[in-house]
Amino acid sequence: MLILSSISNSLYTVAVQGLALATLLPAEFGIFSLVYLFFGLSLSFSHSTLIDVWVRSPKVAWAEYGSVLFWLSTAISWLGFAVALTVSSSVIEAAFIGLGLGAGVYRNGARFYSARSLKWGRVIAPDIFGLVILLFSFYILSMSQNNFTSVLVAWSLSLAISAASSKRAIITNPKGMQAWLSRHKKLIKPLWLDSSLLDISVILTPIMMSAFMSAASFGLYRSISSAALPVRLLLSPLRPNISSLSPDFLLRGKHLTAVVGTGALVALGISLVLVGISVLGVLPESILPKVADYAIPAGIFAFGTLISNVYYISARSHANLRSVNLGRVVETILMVAGPVIGLIFNGISGAIWAFAICAALTGASWLYILLRENHHPKY
Image 1: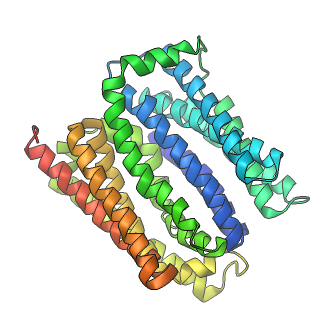
Image 2: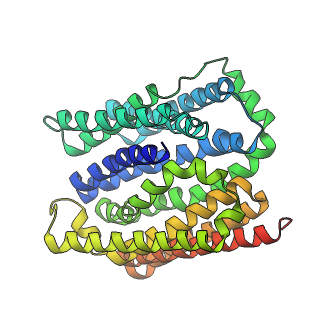
């Protein structure tokens, strides 16, 4: 069932990002990437406020967890709609952005709970429904709408259907959200600090850099992150399971070798696929041929992302939160300073190479911190 859930999540995730990569021009991909960055910010906030708090807390019943998740996703949906209105000339597009953000947060939270609880029906079915709606709605919309609108609306609708078919919340008074924050504030504060530093490096820095790039250049810069899609396909459905593994297990020689070896194989595969796209001239009107020019840094970024994510998830779930915050500070410095310096000295090419190299250094830093934590628990 774990394998099936990984496949279903992978198919859905690759369909969303695959549609964007295969159909959008660089400038359109840049705009869609901004929406996706805010989506990532919303998921990060929900993990620090609810999901990772639940992992570290004594068992909390679905009645409380689901209600907090519902009100949290509702608030994010309205906030997303309001922000989108300030930058978009279309009220309808802004509404779909708000819907997608809120539905995505609910789907992610409900999926995590169900996966950790081994309720696989509530994990796999929403993935399949989301995939079907995504492809069907894009096909219908593309007959009358431009590709950007088709991708945006299809993404939003698919998340809404996926959320609706997930484990249903038992909705109680919204004051329960305030009670949750008050009761778990000792856990939430350091997790928020960790997530805030993450968001600065992974989300807010690219948004800031977009002001100094054309939409096309920003789309190319963000596409390097999208090239690491196989890593996210592999790790996203496994996060509940990785979080349950002890650091000692993940740091044993054969398991460490397996993680590093998998990262190297994935990186090599991504680089070779991108080279093949360039040689064969696949989808010449999309952004992919331009991404292929940076096949090597794309592979390096994928390798660093896999190592970083595996050992960060373990640290966040088990390590001393001071150590987690130290690791996040190191990552923030690397992922903020590196790309900005690269952009200043060598334009878009410098930004991309620095982005990739700093991702690999981040992976090494998380591995080092978890090794140190595992041998010195009071660090």
